[in-house]
Amino acid sequence: MKRETLKHRRRRLRREKLIRNCTRIAVCVIAALGLIALGWNLVAPHLGNRAEQAGTQKQDGPIVEVQAAETEDGSGTAGIAQLAETTTVPYEVPGWQYDNTGWWYALSNSTYYQNGFAVIDDKTYHFDQSGYISTGWTPIGGKGYYFDENGVYDPERNASMMIAMTFDDGPGNYTCDLLDVLKQYGAKATFFLQGVNIEQYGGEAVSRMSAEGHLIGNHSYDHPNMLKLSAEDAAAQFQRTDNLIAQYNNGVGAAVVRFPYGNKSKELEQIAARPCFMWDVDTLDWESKNVQSNIQAVLDGVEPGQIILMHDIYQSTVEACKTIIPELINRGYELVTLETLAAANGVELQNGVTYYGFSAADFAAGNISDAEE
Image 1 (cartoon, rainbow, N blue to C red):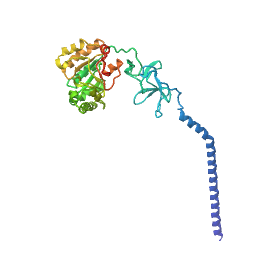
Image 2: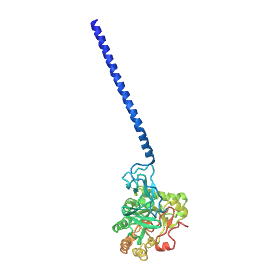
Image 3: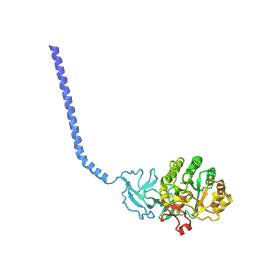
Image 4: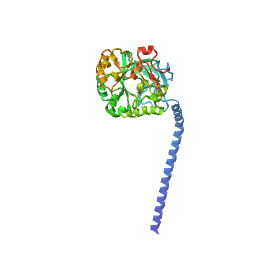
């Protein structure tokens, strides 16, 4: 009996100890919850104020007032625009920012320059309507402005001696020889390509045009008189050629169009849906196939701003260019693409419009394009 009594007493003592421990834990938990509740009551009003402030403005960077651009065409002082709520400014403000599209300038975490000129660190920049800097020749307010690769305006750059050499119907057997000459003299050209010839000669030639900075145009698939085609067939001519160009041009089709034989209509221009081009000087190289005749056709009457038409599928044309290109450069001419020629003359190219030339005579005659026809 004595042993049983001892066991019973031990069990009772263990129960009492367990109850005491549970009681202590419960008291600690209740005390902790009380402290948390008290702290929340003290802090919550301040957190609410911060939340309200965050909802109205960003905390980092200066606050800049939004203002409209000085002129709608971007020829005046840049405006200050409001960033979209979803746009994050990745770098220090005020300062330069960069994304997949290009460089732009944030004045604060919520504002940026847009549509006009701005002086930053004593250098002049131009920002387009989306807020990105302009580079190269850019048409602004009917004038051409040059900005270097960093977007800095260079008022000394002169566009008065530019011409555009254009080549139709290629690529062909001699196109890479012509590309060699252009590369040797740092000249750029525009190539209007036929799809049927891309299939045969396009691999190296079109890849080089793309890589070496030449402008690639669409000249139909197999050179029909497009005035005699249905709208569907005309569109197919362009689309088929664009698909072939894209294989060698980073997945992109032609940027500009020239109609076979120069035969155009308003309907065809709308189908082309890109800037379209005629020419000032037709060398008739396809007819003469004579080196000296081709040289004279260009050099005897060339003027700044002109568009010259030749064909790189003829050996005589490419041979003539070995004399024409260095001689033009020796005379002070700069050989550029059609896009550059237009921009340097202050002309902003429009889709579905045909352009004839950018010489002084073209401007004097009002014969720049058919936009008003």
